[in-house]
Image (cartoon, rainbow, N blue to C red; front, side):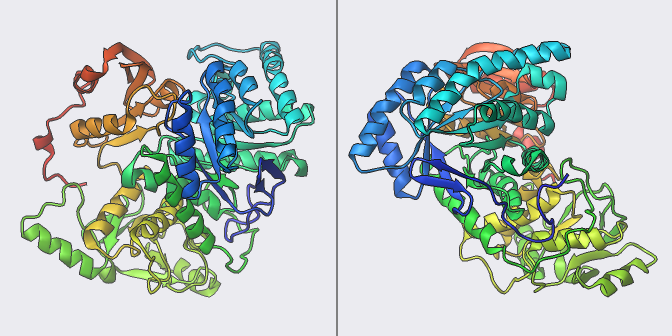
Length: 593
């Protein structure tokens, strides 16, 4: 199966056009950026104001949750208010659990998002075997519930997103395909087949997950399956890393997942999901599109070359080991961080002066590494490496006219697997990004996507000149890509009208109480839409159960219910201690990553 023409050059996937109000998706249209309101859908004035604010910063589609029929009906007034102000931004209704709400919303908006995992199913985490007859009967039941919505959307010219979430796959899908990218893809295809049977084609797909590796694998598998199904399955794709979190971590996770797929030519509309005010998502999305687009247009590279990795399932490249400045690189050893000699010296001086960088420690000095730099297109230079009797640390030479992602993929494909690889975030250090956000996104998209491909044994980050910021960014990219866990990992959803508590304030309180817990993963979910499913990828979960009430999870199992919000953070701390993962903050001071 192939999901793009070549893994070694940029070529945007050509899709059919899907029109959403006044905005075209796919085909030759630019990649669109969108966001979602955080206020109560019944607060018409607030919804109009937030929509105006989003449009003012460049948002091209505005999504609004419709958790009930009553909320869905109020979309009429929100849309009317926007249109009366001359704002024609398409409105997307976000639906979970309620087919009736979807049907009502489709009367007023330009697009409806449905989640196949909960549109016609309830998730109980039941374990059972479905016979083929039982499975077919379930699909017939789904068809009966879904066809009326498809017919209404078709008659009104309303578009649709069939949006699978890793955290909310149905029990039926889970029992047949498991908690996997394949399950995510098949869940969406079941609904797409029903839509196509109705001769309805105005839909896009999405495959969201909070884990960038899962998200990347699911989207690649989706596009590969669409390619197998035929040329008329060329539907546009919406990209997003769900529950990415806030601050630098949220931006890094989004850049890794979205950036990797954009580099492969996949993606027609994107949302960067941050646990922040929605207006902060748009500049990040715009910068990400700009950064990845700037890396395209390189010369075409051979497409028949075998890959050095499985693009649908993560496996780290099995390299030999070399010793470098007191560290071992390659094999199953940790990915190490290289900085310039100047940056390394500045950080060492700070440490000697008593300034503790915490979990971040400078490791390799790039200029002093014994590393061989080659042009991966130069077969003679690569062949010479094959004659070496011992493993050598290898990297791509600077100023090779390829994007870094494609250059390092090509190097990994040509290179004898016994040689470990030093990744670089740029091959043109003389052309630094214009600002800190662009540097963060560019480095994350390059290094993170390669690490998620299983390529790389050390990283050399050069886009960020400030020593402390460069070191922190390098470690945070390793953390977000799952390569090296050195601090607490948070999965935090963006706020929306379903949220049952203030996500930004609560996330800050939880981080203040738990940020010292190295390697513990905590999920913070405003409601149960994705909460229980995403708990499976977290050690502990803090989920809104009712207004003012919190449910606490261990894995995907709720263990404490209806805790008053004022007590919930301390009760979470107690739960972590009950499971032997709590340590006092001062007991971790001075430890290295």
